[in-house]
Length: 224
Image (cartoon, rainbow, N blue to C red; front, side):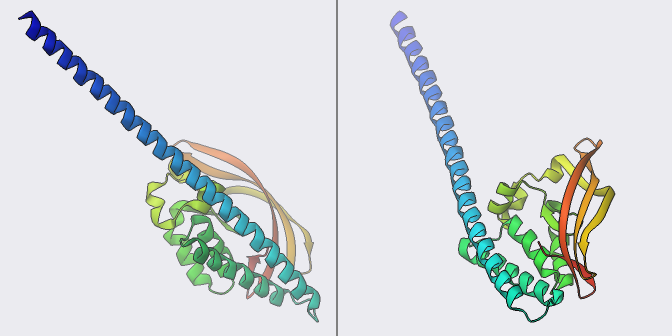
């Protein structure tokens, strides 16, 4: 009887140890997967960051050559040329990395508005849970590194800042023009944004912003 009891105790102990080892193994696998996922996202962010930096240098060089070689200081032509370069770069990024990131989408809206304002507005409305409008531009509610690596087709799996701090809008702003010739201006903006948290409490955030904008086709558009 004692021998059977001893065997049963050993069996229960073995099962308990086995379950503990399996649990530890599963935890280790999950932690390893999470680390690989984080490393992958970080690596992708670095690759996209370098791509964007290289593109910005190329665009700046091409735009400078265009503006310098222009026979007249035509703001509309300069703005159209610049927006066209930026928009082509947006689509080049998608083709290179085989997905459309949230930041890429925001960039498209910002530079598409000059050519197709209705389409730009429709894109903003479609993804408005993850985008917000500042004075002149549209920007993601996610942090930059997350925004450049998050596929818009996977947004439902990402917790947006709107979930913890819903952006309501700008409630007050002071602004002024640093430089203007009537069709091109550099402006400054200082203001307060209104947000709402999960339990419905309202809070505010201050912001400052400089803008470089051109008046083209009856609207002020972001230049840089």
